[in-house]
Image (cartoon, rainbow, N blue to C red):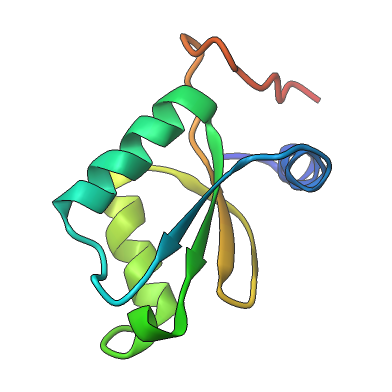
Length: 101
């Protein structure tokens, strides 16, 4: 679990650096999407998920995030509208983000 300063640091980091962004559309979240997000979190640690309007027809954004976080074990850094920034630490990554603030 991240503390407030770490979340603020990651929020600033995500706004000043280009990070990977996934669009979740009408195909919803299947195993391929879960695997792609998992691989991206392993490599980059910090990514953005953009939930398109068509993805929110059957489930709410909160329900989809709960499903994903239970499978992938990430922290939600912040949410603006339908764009969610998520983080999962991986110290073995070449692109490790040092969040010790």
